[in-house]
Length: 118
Ligand code: AMP
Image 1: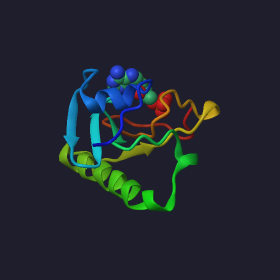
Image 2: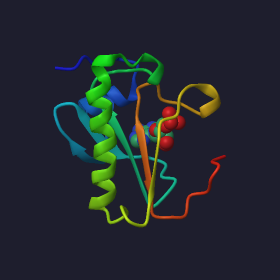
Image 3: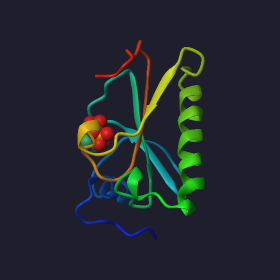
Protein backbone atom coordinates (compact mmCIF):
# COMPACT_ATOMS: atom_id res chain seq x y z
CA UNK A 1 0.00 0.00 0.00
CA UNK A 2 1.22 3.51 -0.83
CA UNK A 3 2.21 5.39 2.35
CA UNK A 4 -0.07 8.29 3.21
CA UNK A 5 1.62 11.56 4.07
CA UNK A 6 -0.42 12.73 7.00
CA UNK A 7 -0.24 16.40 6.09
CA UNK A 8 -1.00 15.89 2.38
CA UNK A 9 -4.54 16.66 1.19
CA UNK A 10 -4.27 14.55 -1.95
CA UNK A 11 -2.91 11.53 -0.02
CA UNK A 12 -6.01 11.87 2.17
CA UNK A 13 -8.35 11.98 -0.83
CA UNK A 14 -6.60 8.94 -2.32
CA UNK A 15 -6.95 7.12 1.02
CA UNK A 16 -10.65 8.03 1.24
CA UNK A 17 -10.09 10.11 4.39
CA UNK A 18 -11.25 13.30 2.62
CA UNK A 19 -14.14 13.13 0.14
CA UNK A 20 -13.46 13.51 -3.53
CA UNK A 21 -15.42 12.96 -6.72
CA UNK A 22 -13.32 10.22 -8.21
CA UNK A 23 -13.62 9.71 -11.97
CA UNK A 24 -10.88 7.10 -12.43
CA UNK A 25 -8.57 4.97 -10.33
CA UNK A 26 -6.17 2.11 -10.82
CA UNK A 27 -3.19 0.75 -8.91
CA UNK A 28 -1.00 3.80 -9.53
CA UNK A 29 -3.27 6.79 -10.35
CA UNK A 30 -6.43 8.43 -9.01
CA UNK A 31 -8.31 11.16 -10.91
CA UNK A 32 -10.94 13.34 -9.26
CA UNK A 33 -12.87 16.53 -9.95
CA UNK A 34 -11.25 19.79 -8.88
CA UNK A 35 -13.28 21.27 -6.02
CA UNK A 36 -13.02 24.72 -7.63
CA UNK A 37 -13.43 23.98 -11.34
CA UNK A 38 -11.96 26.49 -13.78
CA UNK A 39 -13.66 24.93 -16.81
CA UNK A 40 -16.69 22.66 -17.40
CA UNK A 41 -14.31 19.70 -17.16
CA UNK A 42 -11.58 20.16 -14.55
CA UNK A 43 -10.04 16.94 -13.33
CA UNK A 44 -6.87 16.40 -11.32
CA UNK A 45 -4.82 13.35 -12.28
CA UNK A 46 -2.81 12.31 -9.25
CA UNK A 47 -0.32 9.48 -8.66
CA UNK A 48 -0.87 7.38 -5.54
CA UNK A 49 2.84 7.86 -4.86
CA UNK A 50 3.49 11.04 -2.89
CA UNK A 51 5.79 13.18 -5.05
CA UNK A 52 5.84 16.82 -3.87
CA UNK A 53 6.61 18.49 -7.21
CA UNK A 54 8.05 17.84 -10.65
CA UNK A 55 11.42 18.77 -9.14
CA UNK A 56 11.27 15.51 -7.18
CA UNK A 57 10.72 13.16 -10.11
CA UNK A 58 13.23 10.34 -10.60
CA UNK A 59 13.80 8.19 -13.69
CA UNK A 60 11.69 5.42 -12.16
CA UNK A 61 8.69 7.79 -12.34
CA UNK A 62 8.87 8.12 -16.14
CA UNK A 63 6.30 5.41 -16.77
CA UNK A 64 3.98 6.84 -14.12
CA UNK A 65 4.07 10.33 -15.62
CA UNK A 66 3.51 8.88 -19.08
CA UNK A 67 0.45 7.05 -17.77
CA UNK A 68 -0.86 10.29 -16.22
CA UNK A 69 -0.56 12.11 -19.55
CA UNK A 70 -2.19 9.26 -21.46
CA UNK A 71 -5.01 9.17 -18.92
CA UNK A 72 -5.61 12.90 -19.49
CA UNK A 73 -6.03 12.23 -23.22
CA UNK A 74 -8.30 9.30 -22.50
CA UNK A 75 -10.52 11.27 -20.09
CA UNK A 76 -10.70 14.16 -22.57
CA UNK A 77 -11.89 11.71 -25.19
CA UNK A 78 -14.35 10.05 -22.80
CA UNK A 79 -15.93 13.47 -22.13
CA UNK A 80 -16.03 14.40 -25.81
CA UNK A 81 -13.35 17.11 -25.78
CA UNK A 82 -10.51 15.40 -27.64
CA UNK A 83 -11.31 17.12 -30.94
CA UNK A 84 -12.45 20.50 -29.57
CA UNK A 85 -9.33 20.73 -27.44
CA UNK A 86 -8.21 20.60 -23.85
CA UNK A 87 -5.36 21.78 -21.68
CA UNK A 88 -3.04 19.81 -19.39
CA UNK A 89 -0.99 21.65 -16.77
CA UNK A 90 1.45 20.86 -13.98
CA UNK A 91 2.04 23.87 -11.73
CA UNK A 92 5.40 23.82 -9.95
CA UNK A 93 6.19 25.95 -6.90
CA UNK A 94 5.25 29.47 -5.97
CA UNK A 95 5.33 31.58 -9.11
CA UNK A 96 3.37 28.94 -11.02
CA UNK A 97 0.74 28.84 -8.29
CA UNK A 98 1.25 25.33 -6.95
CA UNK A 99 -0.81 25.07 -3.77
CA UNK A 100 -0.91 21.31 -3.15
CA UNK A 101 2.51 19.69 -2.94
CA UNK A 102 1.63 16.29 -4.35
CA UNK A 103 2.01 16.35 -8.11
CA UNK A 104 -1.19 16.56 -10.12
CA UNK A 105 -1.93 17.05 -13.77
CA UNK A 106 -4.80 19.48 -14.34
CA UNK A 107 -7.10 18.51 -17.23
CA UNK A 108 -9.24 21.46 -18.35
CA UNK A 109 -11.78 21.45 -21.15
CA UNK A 110 -15.14 22.74 -22.26
CA UNK A 111 -14.41 26.40 -22.87
CA UNK A 112 -11.96 28.47 -24.89
CA UNK A 113 -8.75 28.65 -22.84
CA UNK A 114 -6.66 31.76 -23.30
CA UNK A 115 -2.93 31.76 -24.00
CA UNK A 116 -0.68 32.87 -22.44
CA UNK A 117 -2.28 31.82 -19.16
CA UNK A 118 -2.53 34.36 -16.36
P1 AMP B 1 -2.34 23.69 -7.83
O1 AMP B 1 -2.68 25.13 -7.52
O2 AMP B 1 -1.79 23.46 -9.19
O3 AMP B 1 -1.48 23.10 -6.73
O4 AMP B 1 -3.74 22.94 -7.83
C1 AMP B 1 -4.37 22.51 -6.67
C2 AMP B 1 -5.80 22.29 -7.05
O5 AMP B 1 -6.42 21.51 -6.04
C3 AMP B 1 -6.62 23.59 -7.17
O6 AMP B 1 -7.14 23.71 -8.49
C4 AMP B 1 -7.71 23.41 -6.12
O7 AMP B 1 -8.96 23.93 -6.53
C5 AMP B 1 -7.75 21.91 -5.95
N1 AMP B 1 -8.25 21.44 -4.69
C6 AMP B 1 -8.00 21.94 -3.46
N2 AMP B 1 -8.63 21.23 -2.52
C7 AMP B 1 -9.31 20.24 -3.17
C8 AMP B 1 -10.16 19.18 -2.75
N3 AMP B 1 -10.46 18.96 -1.45
N4 AMP B 1 -10.70 18.38 -3.70
C9 AMP B 1 -10.42 18.58 -5.01
N5 AMP B 1 -9.61 19.56 -5.46
C10 AMP B 1 -9.06 20.39 -4.55
